[in-house]
Image (cartoon, rainbow, N blue to C red; front, side, top):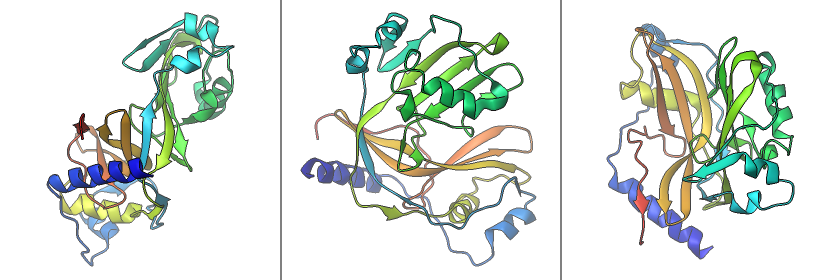
Length: 264
């Protein structure tokens, strides 16, 4: 508990050293303002206030998993660099892109191919796929909210003939809350914040809005994560951009650099 309080205090201090981006409670409905700027939204926008945590977790280096009985085949076909495991299946592994969720779950439950696969959930908002090729992405979750960053991710490369040509895997362990559960800002509220901060160009299309834990601080071997709303949009010139908003304080995340504290 003492370490959790310490980690949270380090995170809190770091947050207040960063420049804040304004948000607003303007009375005109955000959906009407988006419509006025010819900004379209593919799905309904929720006003639900979900709940989430400040979390801490450690990055796994896979040593203990690779040494477990039953994982020798995976170990022989894998290499690890900077806590990222890359594996090339020793036998033919297929993936049906048209039934991605079922195919993903089937592979995650095959202990001869994937280690700790049951911990990962398919992320359609992050995956990329067309008729023949794809990068299928999954991640660990905490109480129903996935981790959406590079520290907890499995990516399946799908080649010709629906073959899994390789996969990369990262994993976090020792996941625990730093504070009690808190109410999160809604999709509608964070869209309002992005709009008034000029992060949604006119005549663009908002294609996806999804929630995930995102690493914001690294202290020695511990990472600190917060719930973040990801808003994917396509601009009028067909450029795709992803905006991020801290779901706990409704602030736009403008800096992708994660502060690292070596000797707090």
